[in-house]
Length: 382
Image 1 (cartoon, rainbow, N blue to C red):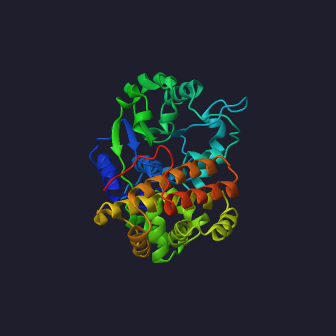
Image 2 (image 1 turned 180 degrees about the vertical axis):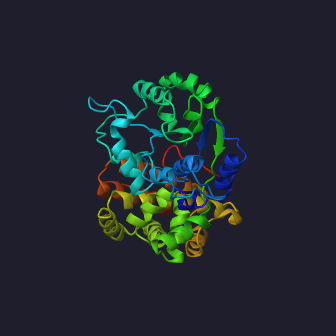
Image 3 (image 1 turned 45 degrees about the horizontal axis):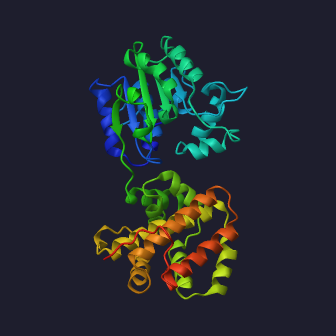
């Protein structure tokens, strides 16, 4: 994988290249980012650049023997570790290495949910177990087979429990020419003993403009669609791609109309809406609810006289201003957000969508029309 294949993150790419040029590559680094920002592909491209036989100033050559093997993730000195679902046939990560490589070759932007869907997870919990830690130590104790540097890329060290302490010695005193690259989303969930032995590389969220350009150029979306999807994905390429694949493209108006139905106590219209929503499919339903949560948070900024902080596309902003002027107040917005978050939780757990959307619709009538807020709602006074 080359840096040029990765969306955005130009400053980070240059920073990583500079460490190689100046010969100051730290032997243990933690790439820390929110999901969908490109941390895993950056780690792979960095490793490829380090082992490239004909480096260019801005990227690996892509054609030398090392780069060709890296591009298929089969270089003998490139090792991966990642969460998996142990069973009698799957003891360590290499037992699902074919699935891992297939995933990377298909799309190197993915998260734990997508990875889980590719495996026979059943009801098992993913982890990186003690057997995997021992296998890491064993693999890295060998000399580099072909390249100058052995690289271990450990994806989601958050899934290392106390067993991760078995890796401390090899990380602190690694074999010669060994590089550890840990790729994480949540610093608080990583073992503190592991964290203290790594150099942290913070990778920022992708700007909305970068996501917009990617969606327009890579997926042929209109500017308006790209703006809406980039706003909803909040810098997450994975979410943006899911939206392109699954989401209806009129969230703003559809959600606003749902609120208006509640305000107008239009029971028959709400039943029609519920019947439609029940046919969308789980991902579309989740994305619609997620959009509603984000939209109402932006409405809350408008209601708090903080329009300069609002990130809505122009058409959605017009809708939001109408709703905040005539329908919503801060307490209503907070109450509806609570209802939508609960609905999103239950949709993820395969709740009946018709019953769920009907219940939320009735709650909208209570909150917006009759100004009856659910128990436990925190009141906000302006």
